[in-house]
Length: 233
Image (cartoon, rainbow, N blue to C red; front, side, top):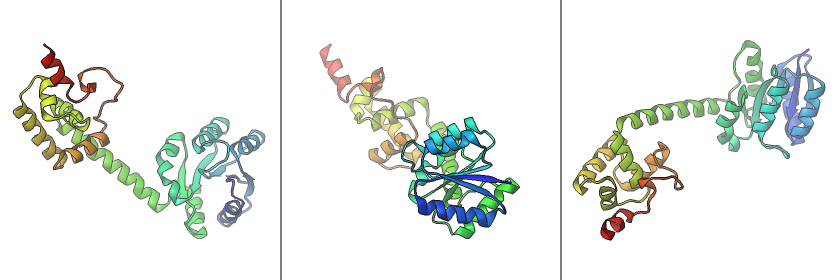
């Protein structure tokens, strides 16, 4: 007999998911837990073939529940079932080991159909979650192409633009002329498909090209520091 553990602090959600599971699987044994502590205590006493977990638990982040459950019961098939507003947690939870991600606003019939697919090796993913995953990978491919398109010097210049350095600051810091900085800037705008500094800064941040403020080296100096040093000599 299959067994399932519903981990959700909301009793109405527990009741609805119980109904979904009973409709999807014949003779399934269902237990409920309202917290990570309760879930882990039950998992210590018995194994569950399926676990449905909400992202909002009173005593721990959902990622902790997923990781700890899979350490305790590695054969458990863990599926996140949560509100659409929590879909931003999708990637961290999938990385933590979750096997599927469903949204609570799906109909009971749709949730049951997606969960039934687990018996056929089909990961249960709401259609909107699947689109988010595809968008993430498409964005990652675009990002990789953009980074490769920039030369090492252009990467340095765009990171400085994003930090607020003006053309003179960059020229002084890199020991190049302002006209050369202008050429680099035009190339950066063209390659990133932007038209101004603000858009370039946004793209640089998204590409991970902006260095941390507490790092070392010339790029972390405050704007104008190059001119100050130059005038001091």
